[in-house]
Image 1 (cartoon, rainbow, N blue to C red):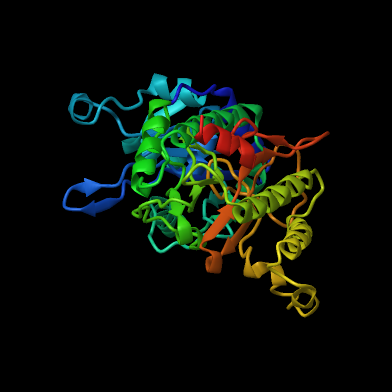
Image 2 (tube, one colour; image 1 turned 120 degrees about the vertical axis):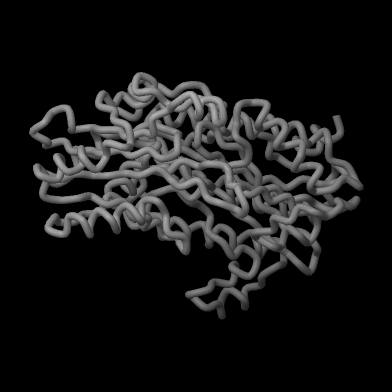
Length: 430
């Protein structure tokens, strides 16, 4: 891995928290992701299942974690299974985790090779009444590929049909939403790497540059600083491309007078950052562009203030919608009649700001979190208002990652990344 070792205290604490919410005499099982094939002998780069990583820190394929806090055999209360490494694997793929290295990474004392899984699992099933299976129930999930977890669950329930079944996901949704200080430090590192990339491209952008050339500058800076790369597929959208919310082609030339909307960010140690900025290709905003830019920035600042303990996500978005409506009226994009006659299910402001303002962020860009529950301290949210005006040939989105604080104003993990219009212009013309 490119990242520095993570203190195993994080994963020990995460397992303890999960175990405290399990039913009596229950066994929870977590599988790694597959290595997904492309064609022939090609595969996609491996990405660890975030739940397994959250509970163990193991960042390796063909790994399994089992948690059984009430097991009469104390050695089987926490168990890791890994593929046994050998000289052939070491030569062709590099060394895998040894049992000692797995303990140092995770804090799990009992480590078996994967070949022993069925035998060890059988003993564990004789003690337990309930299996916790791990299903993906994120509100944005749209799964069409059967995962390693899915296949294992199908096999497990067919082989042991007499056991009861419970779900891990509601527990994980609750736990993963609130970040440990170690997690916040890792997310800060991801944001700091993103800052380096953004500052680099401010000196690179000029009329005639291609969107993919900017993408290349960013990935260079990210990997140079121990990131695997982009936290998600990057958006580098010049001119009217910015009005396509998920524009990812990044294949157009940037023209004088246009704006470039960036939705780009680095990951670090599987933790994500999520940044949006909008900059002028020529290094200077027009009067109209700056007016819209400052309106978006104002909405972002006001929305950030609302991220406090006890806030309900749905109510928050309604309040932000009111702030955005006021700005759109000032810009002449809406008039009073538009607001008076609006559909309450699709308010007038949605014509220019059609997406949500905030989502949880952490190990996933759209991280776990129960949206009907009040916000809590140490939850991390994006704040990302935008105004999109196809008729005027530009769109503007601004986004930072913000930690809810127990007392005081929310803490912006991206507070050092330039955002004020004048600061952007000064840096681009330095």
